[in-house]
Length: 472
Image 1 (cartoon, rainbow, N blue to C red):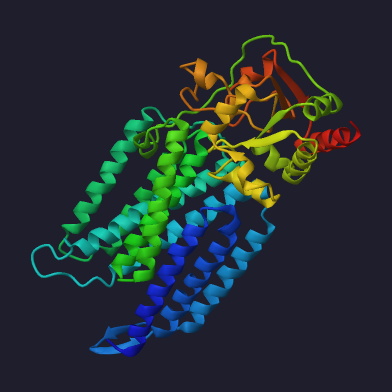
Image 2 (cartoon, helix red, strand yellow):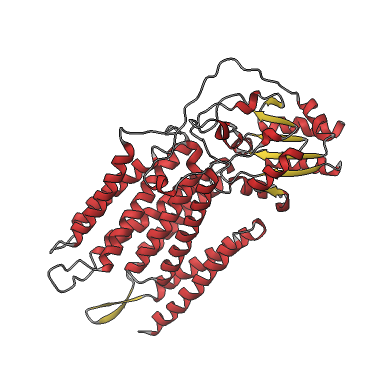
């Protein structure tokens, strides 16, 4: 092995260490940004090392990479587009950006795998492509394609281009399962071919893209955080397998880390949503339909009255949701929290694991406003404290506080653990209207005797409450 390749192997080890360190630091908001920069630095080092140090054998001699001008042009264009999108995206659209970028990763893994098939030397024997290498390439094509098309559909749902409700074909689960089995069978058939299989592999890519679309279409909006997490694990897995295809250590380790972390997060999300991972794979998520239960009594409250309730409470819990992100009201909420704490009120935040549109959405939002991390309570902790809470303030959340999950077995969210805000002495819900949440179902919490609705934009409502608290 030439010296540049030996140096490159060391660089890959160093880059892998930065991936591990960065992932570890992402576990806490205080170190997450630094961890992301460390991992990005390692990836940059691995990319540059590959460009300048990688050597391959051709006609018995070692060669450097050629056409570097095209490589750097692609890097420059990709960097410019990524930087532009990342700098312009509002916090409310962060889930869409995550889905889009994740889809691009899956597409890269799939296309790299297809291209790598052209360079796989046939093995001796009757079935020259019946090898672990070809199996890995085809598997990466399958997983990467599903990740790409599924992520694009998820992006469309989150962006509102596609209905957030469940879109199903007749016998959708059966079709999905048969299609997946057909794709796997097609892959086995490819490996048993005696001649070149590259041209036929594009058929597998097309079928996999179709499966990705059918996989995400039936998934309702309330289940979208689980889907984003699962598709992220798909992309990591595809990248890791692609790394095996051409023996790239950095890509193998990076893919394994992303795939395993995404899988673990998916399992945690499934538990939080009370869903089965198998149902995720075959696309058996539930969609929602709005319900009409006739006339209901709604109690409203003014910002001034809400301020009095909060200012003279002993314990207050804030429950943030997607409406908080839409209104960009996290800084105003933090200001209100500080005002109440200065008055001696105990203030905490109840965070549902799937609040918002992606895992950790509310944590990121509150971290941006410098909300102390120790004030954030997970679902079980928060539910234990709601009975002793004087006022629970729901800001833009809906499905994650909907009692139907506990009381109606026919509800699309039946069985999903919720934040039991109804156990608080008083509940203030800040919301624009009584419209249903992303799951598309009504929320009986709004009509309970201890619930008061404050109909307004979250930021405007909180600003009025802050002003009123200052005058109390």
